[in-house]
Image (cartoon, rainbow, N blue to C red; front, side, top):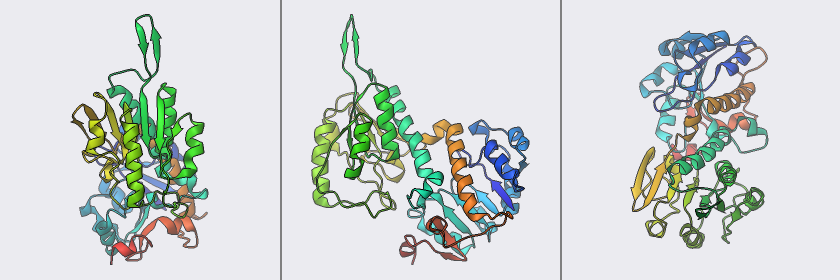
Length: 373
């Protein structure tokens, strides 16, 4: 069994496995090939990988020799034809990249996209969306605090008092909850919106106010993901958001729906009511953003409001992000590698089946198949 770790394209700074995770595999007798320089931006150099038992190779050598390839992002299209009968594991957003998945199927790849894992208790140990979303929520607040030209906490000084910043968080998933906790530590006053009433208790336990909007669609059967809402609900939601956003200094938006463009939650009209100097951090930028002005991996100003669209927030903490991602990978590999270190794809396992996108020349995921006739 040979596992290959590929270097990610710029501007990604993470790597699929750090040396400490490689050591776990090599101790089991698995050969690990690491592309030269793969961990440089995550503060893990080639010498550390070699100390962990890995073999440093060129990219072409890793691609050719490995049975399982680890790459957070998609390899170059020109490299795909040479990967027939190989297993590739990463975060490939198959619902948005259907044509690529069809091509990978035709080329004979077996593809596992960990962003498609069922959101179950058993899957938590390999849930890359949660491990990386946690970092995104944390860094979103710190990024906002750095840009925002005023204090976050309340200050009482001889020169006068400073009111605490008011933070509005749209979406109380893993990223949103971490954003709440981080903003609370910095002394902000926080309001939170989410379409799932079930998260109200978690939000309040972190010290934030949960703003309820009645009539949300039932998301209990969506596997932990958000679902599309009715037009009536969206109107009620926008009215409530408009009331809160007019008072907010910082807005963190996290709302995404798998396979769809991110919903527009903050309209141009709402932004006109925001205080001059306010900041919006749009974590949903990769799928279009929650404002009509969001540009992925860019910072734009609309009137007096700064909008930061950043889908690479986890990469700003490359070492810890890679450590957590690598642990997720190790846990998933246990499901597809047997005790003799052979690939064993158990299709009766809901997690293996749930994130397999292509296999045996076909697109096999039940949610991707309808999109790729």
